[in-house]
Length: 577
Ligand code: ADP
Ligand code: MG
Image: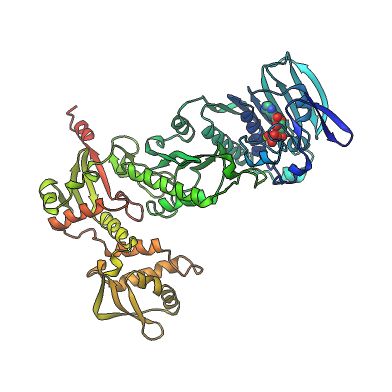
């Protein structure tokens, strides 16, 4: 027990809690912590988790406007501490400036309870292991109204009624009950994903919305929280460095969403937002997914607390890494490796989520199921030299579009256009083929409109790097002198026109196409088309080249290059089993 000064001339007894001195308070990122009911839920549940609770129950009435009650079975507070806990800057979690640099708890500023207490009617019931009875405290607009002993098990219950009763402006800004509940559910999901061993319950208007039992395995929790067919379409992310560890789950490329809602980042179990982490995920998937589609990514980073600053944002949502680039690059690498190691060939299966049907771009979620690793992409010897390939792998081009072949696990159906696009895209992005340029015997001339020619001018340099030499020929005309060899006999004029119109579609602001988009366009034009008849050697080359690409399983627009019909599935279909 210690004596602490809470204001000049005012001394109070305390157990674990202290009132932070001004030199620490001044170093704390100040700002509003209680914006809406979900922020109250967040702060209270954080306190429960910091108190070591294994069960956290959240009860809500009227989307939080009238009641938010969080019940935990954590350590509880002594009578001295509970009397202090709603004072400004009262915390048991840090006591020195140095502590600010190694935060390992969710809270540390001693601001939440005091802020919540000042805008609501608060009731706290708490009991530690040592106490014979619980203490109940009632606080109105920050003032303690009553304290008494009552019977209650170990742990803490915090009840917040009439939120924002004395700040009508803030109350007015609350959104519809459905929206506010949506925020609360999202907060609960974040906690649930970060703490799989903790049981979480959420009750709204006496109806149980969530009851997540403790699980050892994070994937089981992910499955329960995010549901659907997600779990079987995830691959496991894992990466370790001396000072940090990255792990988690990523959706395979054909399981994507129309929003970023499936992306969660946790740093030392804290749900956070950080631009470089989002960017790392985006950079890997941008080649694999169609535009405007997003992967599911649940990324956990455990890092030495000294290497991350959590004291940059009032609600602690944003954080800063000491070495932002290292974390970004590590996550990027980890994601790439994860996707490469996993077989990314969609498998045809009976029942829900039928591969052939499920890739509809309008749907919220598209899904294929994937399984096993492909032998086709492991046995290098299998592919070289080409002659042995011809002898060893039977294949067949059908409908001048698909190539049927097989690997250890089943029959493979390859889309020749998608496969060829992927191959060309890869060659172009490696910059290999750009030196191989073909000069046109008779330069092609294109005439453009004023704006279009302006657009093309802006992109001449980038195009030149890729092997297109274009010369201005009058005000709005250009001569195409060279093209990349990979385009062979394809019409360069049409391609240039397409590039210009694609840039134009992007709106007036963007006059330059991202390099990736440019490459995808060139790949699309140069690729083998649906309807092209291929001879055996061309098919063998296509299969061999596809295997050598970075991501053989999807084209640069994110469509699959191949799907597999597993041997087992075939046996079932033919009733052999
Ligand atoms: P912080 O979490 O930043 O320390 P809070 O205002 O959220 O600040 O809480 C103040 C203090 O009250 C905490 O440091 C902790 O000692 C105590 N406390 C709050 N909630 C609980 C709880 N559910 N169980 C045990 N102690 C709690
Ligand atoms: Mg707190």
